[in-house]
Image (tube, rainbow, N blue to C red; front, side):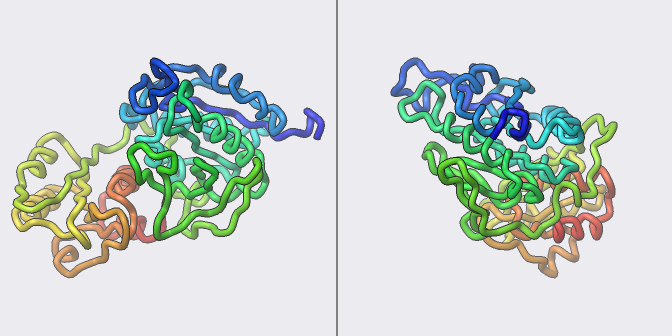
Amino acid sequence: MSKEKLPRITILAVGGTIAGKGADSTQITQYQAGVLTIEALIKAVPQVSDLAEVSGYQIANIASYATTDQLWLKLAMKVNELLSQSHCDGVVITHGTDTLEETAYFLHLTVKSHKPVVMVGAMRPATALSADGPLNLYNGVALAASDVARGHGVLISLNGRIGSARETSKLHTTAIDAFGSPEAGLLGYMVDGRPHFYYKSLRKHTAESEFVLFDLPQLPRVDILFGHSQDTRDLVDAAVAAGAEGIVHAGTGNGGIFPLTRQGLQDANEQGVMVVSTSRIGNGLVTTKPVDLESDFIASGNLTPQKSRILLQLGLTKTHRSTEIQRMFEIY
């Protein structure tokens, strides 16, 4: 394929382990994240020039546990700006793995294009033996440059697997094979630089999403509280006092809530704080229960607490009606 006919892919760098450096090649957990620049990442994988006409832009260079709502807004605006232009056929984002799934889902709901957006990262720093970042970046560019990646929303591609931003999560703290979607399944695989799709997520996203970020200065504050035995309402009250507009409760089992905590959440709801019931389990549905309906709580379905927080934040930019927020949880 001639250079003029290659797809044009922009790589946006946010930092993370993929841009990390350790003291020596055996350090795979003790390293500094977000050190290498986008230029260094691209230079380390010259083979991407065979796949696409690649350009790079440094959005940030941080460890992803330091990700903020403001960074999400900045990143989403940049992705939308790029994809609205004819000279950009797709975007790859290099990102730390700790919050990669959250950034991916935020973009999944706020990017207004059918063009591919692919999130990649690494579980080992660039200096490590058998570093996984270079191949993940290569596969990410190959995926973004492929026509078959269009219309899937934001994709997560690591370790030769392709997942939807909605269903894919980090499931292991250090393993190379850290990402997956146990019950929903993968969308496909990357093999020798070629994507092989088998499934498609049916929930609404990207160009079909109702969420618009234009002139939005900040996102509503939403806190996540983790349920456990012998719980209290103290953290609920603290979240309300701190100005939370919403609370996501990661409950036991099918969204179980300790009685004192439930009373605190009910009181918060009466003060106008939206409450979403999720589960700390990580798999399965949180169903709508009579006690939650009486309390006007939202059932999260199979969204994890961290992704429920994102959907609630975006929902609160449009409405504070619980019936409307529940509708959103049923279609996104």
